[in-house]
Length: 494
Image (cartoon, rainbow, N blue to C red; front, side, top):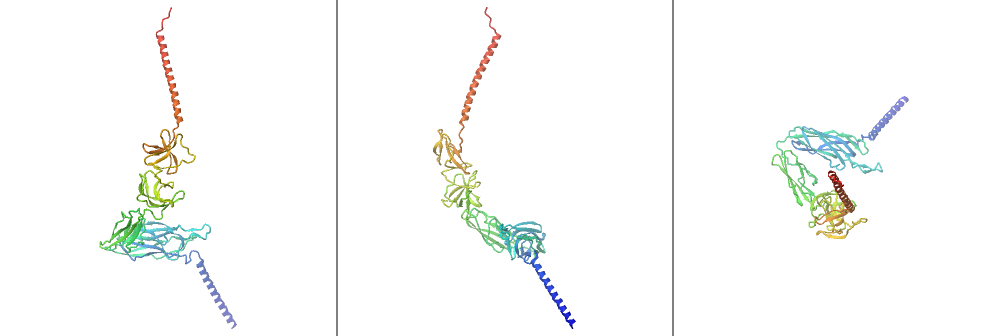
């Protein structure tokens, strides 16, 4: 009896030990799965291919999305290789996912049957003072994120199915540089429908070059709006029909008038009967000045761009044009050969007026018609004589009325008139005025010492030449006399 009790206790003890060991093993397994780096359920990312269409018609465009089921602080990914059957479709376009637009910089390449995409979050930045903090946090999302979209056109002779899937997921790294576990999800297989005559008159893409349209393009939305600056008189419209056999006609995108304009995009299907019209109501602003357009010169002074009044007087030779100044396309007046342009500005204190702006020196100088001389290749402004600069010898203060402007300067006894003026680069000098041509040239006083020296040298050489000439004449006379005396000697007297 005692023996049976001892055997029962032993068996019970063994069972308890077995249960304890099993529990310990289960606990260790769970802890290992939780703590093991790179394989936790939270860090696993699934990449899938999705499409809103259930089939692909011959000649039609098909758009697919590559999505991640989450983005746990990913700072770079790729290369992701998306593959499709090159005999069934051809590449049309690529676009970044709107969810991460502005966060990542993409690199995309294509070859027949493959699109390769890599991206890096260039906004992400860790704090210099605390490595555990961020100046700019990495992109995070626990929800599904569209990484990019690809559009393909089904070839007109294609049959069967169009299969699109992820060939390679590439590497996904988080902000610590750790690789994340990435798996392939679903792919897309679209039956290709055989079309005899297409009735598809929709657009696959619609955009304006450099101009946003509202709302975001959707093939089933036909009315859009947009706004352009006053300087824009024409917009480039890109409209691609969903079916390659449909025709597209764009009208009224040129010679835009101030105010409302309506651009029409008419699509006619292959059957010549099914038609759709897309319209863009585009407003051309009345003002030439972009909103909040400002200019800061090299001294830190701020100016606001304003529209140029119709009744303002523009200097002769300057023509109206549009220039990009400080990143804004604004109305200016320019003259060939002169770097500076005229801008109509407000300095915040004085009345709005014309200013000369030098885009090289970043200087802003008020245009004063009564003190400004505009030469063929230079702008000159009459300026006070700087301290330390002396008036040339022989000149006295005077004024000269040219009939267009009164010059303030200096005149000498020979009626030569000079002014001290500063050019658009701030360099000052004396300029001589020519009343016959109305032109100016830099004045340089003549060096009289050289003239006097030349005069003296001329006189000395002239005297030397005269002496040499007289000496030569005397010498010739004496030689001839000697020769004559020898040839005909005089008789001696007895």
